[in-house]
Length: 402
View 1: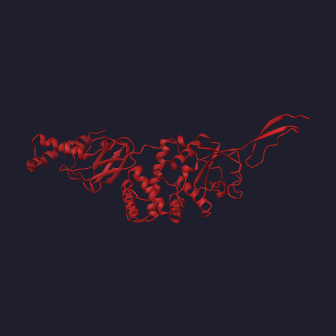
View 2: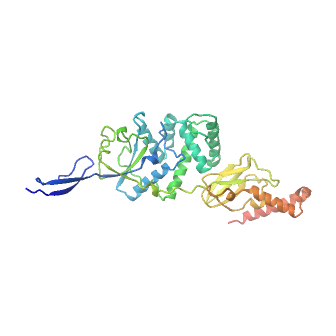
View 3: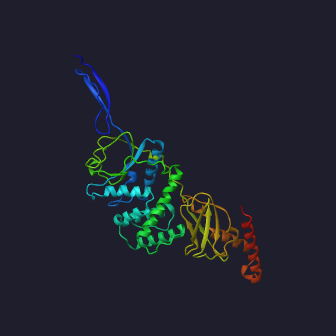
């Protein structure tokens, strides 16, 4: 009888069985079981606020779109893998929260806006909108600051919502109610803004939804709290050849005890560069052009909007490039800046780098004074002639512009 030892490697199948393997008696045998591999997102990237079912970006180091991008890129690189969205919940949460979380992500990816809005209207919370509006303010430059995430629709929240509605109407040329209420119209606008940013993430990482294949016809699965106990949406990439019994109860019993979870490379997903363009519009007398309609073009993208009560134009999520500004009614503005082509400044740049026509105006007026010319002393007809010459020159330049 042999008294030696041996090591035998076997593969655990997705159904929980192993292939038939001969083992010698009369010796010590070490059986090494290799579980099938499943790639997964980490909880930190797709975690939820208490009692929330909507996955939206919020201020913090972990961005949910990074996890989605990493998942989609894995699918592009491994066509033999299929995707699965799993919704998790804590033990004390309602049983349907896991599936609601998974389905909300699925609706978002498939651009099913109405289904997402209905789910958000039925199960969303004020804190979801509060945290996202504050994120838009801090990251995208929207005038939607929320002082505190309280899950209470207080006056500060109403002001932030109304500012969002107004900015959305201008930026997206829409006409939703500007009433400070988070209704279905506003939820639809939140969806559209979030999806626009998500598309920027996809473009930045050279990926798309085209390669997304689902491992199972159900596409989503809820997990029993016993397998994790945390509230998050898990993005799985599973080889099609490994057939797990996803319907086994408790939910996840056919997958989690068997599969070996490997992390998706979320760190390799790069965030797009966010740019905020700020311009203060003044007339020739140095007065702000309040509520002035404008057309702004940059890198092939055209925006329409209106200045605020201080004559400030602020456009969030601008692509990097050069800008051309036109006023809707030809109102007088600093002549030498009206059709000037400018670089878009990143929101991370110093404030001194922001495009501010007020400083240019002060310099312009100082040059006039140094030259001994007082605009108030110029006869009206001469001033009109001078203005006509300048506007005529601008129009000629625009006509010959490429």
